[in-house]
Length: 260
Image (cartoon, rainbow, N blue to C red):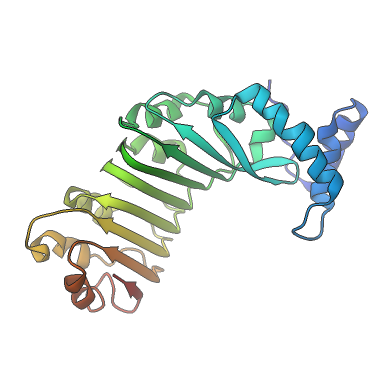
C-alpha cells in the first residue's frame, strides 16, 4: 500500500528519518539525494542506487521498466517496453511511494499492434501526480486513440508521438509546451488545428506520404495561428520546397523560428 507522500522539504526529512528508524536504506538515499549540491552523485548514493533501490524495484516490477533518473529519493524518469496490453509495471509503480515523483515516461513499442487498449487502461490506473512528459518511440506500432491519455493527464507539458496511425482526437492540453509527432497522416490536421494548447511553445510535425498536391492538404494547418506563445515550428514532409516557401509567411510560421 502506498504511504502518504510528503510534499514539503521538511516533510521529506521527517519521512527519511522514519525510514532510517525502521532500518530502511531508502531513508538514507532520500537524504543523500536531497542534500546533494551538484550533478555528480557521491559513492554512497551510487552504492544505494545500484545495490538497493533499483534491485528492489526490479524485484517488484520486473524487467520491462528501467529507471533512468532519480530525484530526492524518488523515481523521476523511466523507460518502459510496451505492447497492446495494459502495462502492469506502471500501475504497480504508481502504487508505490518511489513512483510519486515520476515526471517523465518514455514508452518503447516494438513489433506490430495497436496501443489503444494501453491508453484506455490509463483511465482505471493509479495516477502519477507529477507526470508532465510522455514520449512514445515506435517504428510500426499503431499509436491508436490517444484521448484517454489527455483525460488522465491533462497537465502534460511534453508529448512526443513517434509511430504510425495517430488518432489524436480532441486535444485539450492547457499546460502543454512541446508537441512532436512523426509519420502523421493528413487526417490528423483537423485535431492539430482545433487543439487547445494555449501554452504551446514548440511544435514539431513530420508528415508521411499524402496526395500529390500539398497546398490544399495543408492549407488549414498553415492558416492556423496556434498558441499565442508558440516560438518554434518545424514541419517535415515529402515536399520540403513547398514548406520552405509557404511556412515562414503563413499565419502558422510568421514571426516564429521555422524549420522544414
